[in-house]
Length: 386
Ligand code: CA
Image 1 (cartoon, helix red, strand yellow):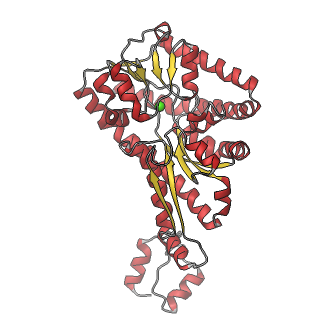
Image 2: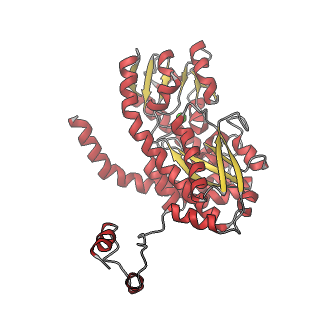
Image 3: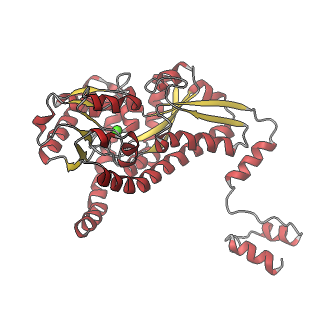
């Protein structure tokens, strides 16, 4: 091993961990320096060289317009990474809402098998099964970090996958998270819970059912139809995501108030949903790559939202004549009470929901006590001095 080879290895941090076999390889003149872990590109090369692996093309049906580059970007990250890691053999392309199926029809299409894979928010389908809400967000539920902890390390994903398999013949993986959402855009002032009565609001999922309990008239519209509904007064209010996407949607141009926080979506996950028959036909190496690509999409989307929301909010506040307000304690308390009551009511009628809710609440109580102690104090302190 010459000096240059040594420095090359040292730069990659593998000298200390070199095995006897590795040293022997150097001694025999092997020029290749092994990486500490197999890189995605190496995996792709391996797949490309394995002539036994099939060439497959899939299209992802999504719930998103192309203009929402961050949320549609979750489907794109997923698709591009699977394609890249298989050297193009398993080629996936993400399609906007409406190209393959309507924005709110993704799970149905995956269930039927008319598309193999979708990227959507599972709570769009609470009308089909209440438990889908856990896959995205539950009112007064988990933050993005807590949601990931529950899904990946708290048994949540296993529980949810079991439910999806039995109920829909679908397997799903988290593939994006927006972080805590804003309360949204209102053309009526909401000072107390009473002001929600009669409010015509676009809000999907269980958050919508809580709003319904509080007296609002709830609508679920796909992304592309909301602006016009708000502009024409067909609705008085809409929630969407947060500053970055909301700015793209232009809601600040047709609203008076921007309320926060979106207590119904403190850390919602998006999902890749795959027809179970299509999944079972994939070679195991493709299944592993799909899981890895979904994981990457999950992390990348959250990081992008966190980074992009900051300048977007500044732009909204500079450009628009909009008043930004926190929901009052009265609104928060009434909403929390109605949310807890709704979850209990659904659990009484729906045994699947009940069993998932028990596990979920136990995890939530623990992690929120922990985050409420340390993280909360840290953020509260920083907020207080800024
Ligand atoms: Ca939302």
